[in-house]
Length: 155
Image (cartoon, rainbow, N blue to C red; front, side):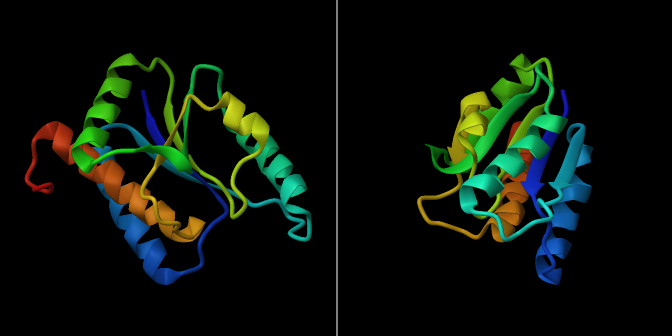
């Protein structure tokens, strides 16, 4: 099993790039990990529904049938960091394919992506930009790995 974090689009903010790079470098110490920035559709003048359909194609082109797809979504289940570590551990023990966490574009996900998803999680009841969420998600994935290993990072 490989743990993956996919995002729609990339960030141009240096501080976010630097933070993401730090956690992307740390995570493979614990398990196979990949961070994938899926390029945004080229035509940004599309309506939100058409844009979500275009993003759907980009996601489904990369997704395998055996992959577990977990959406980062404001209506998803919320966890404490310890609970999230337990969630990751259970998935690691039961998933045959890859465990993919997906951060959508600014308008969220298409209905087909919601239908294909194996679960949804929320990082908070607050709304964050899809740019910042990638850093928060990477940090929480890293924290979950340190919790699973019983390391000091999480108090």
